[in-house]
Length: 391
Image (tube, rainbow, N blue to C red):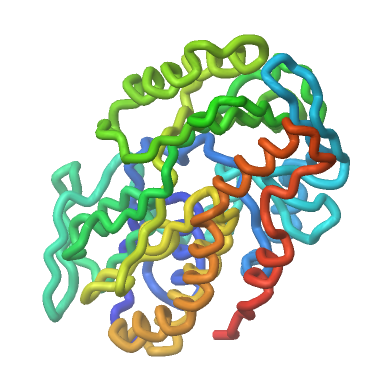
């Protein structure tokens, strides 16, 4: 086998899944992660269709189901607390409760995937790639901490704002902005939610309102608060206090539970804020560097498919490297050929997700009987459109 040493940048879903499959196929894997340890927090995410098959082949499907959010339903309320809609059949974030799909917290899934590799994968926490220099023999990587190492291949699994993409690609920021921003964080469950999700609809045209759901056996909530903006906002995506102020300013006039929810943001250590955006690239590799998951083809949270694309992408990338005997030129081309249509369909679905959600919440406020925030039949068709190969 050629090209047996691989550096993976990023230790969330795409990175840990890629590390597992590369290790399983006989590669020597190192993962570098900027956070000082496994990163807490993040959204509740959905594992669907072929991604469930990936989880089963990893031996983590039972653990995934045990750690599911286990929600029992959802309500939509207005800013005064008046209930507009209630159901025990579905949630906004997870879809139909009787479906085979699994909704799980991002950090729980990342922990499951990373544990699946045991101690065979080397993890470097609290560091990042400073420079990449590749030639015909490998990729020389200098880390922020000052050390330098050479790897045969590098995989960028470091998300929407991928550092690997910035360093290795001619177009380092190919973001397609979708017209809004979203903040996500964890807070104590002082709202009395019992395995439940509540959506707070706001009449303001430029806010998405908020959603909260109880997690960790009802001891905590995950909060989602966002707003629309016709144009991208110029802000430092590393300046977390400034991001908190920006989001809070959009809800300065909120009251009731919405105000209480926004106020919990100030004490949340896992607060995360970013644009709703997608990544569109003509190719997912440059020489010895490839991208997987959000780094290469982010679908945005509105697609509901980011996690599934990351897990499937990791499986296929590692599988094609195995099939090609480590020949990265053949493997990277096959990886892209295998997944391009699946990714394109998911991204097209995600482009209109938040718009559809806003329209359906407005319908509820006007007296509609039930929301339909996504075309579930279309999503099901996309999910079912791809079947895993065996490697």
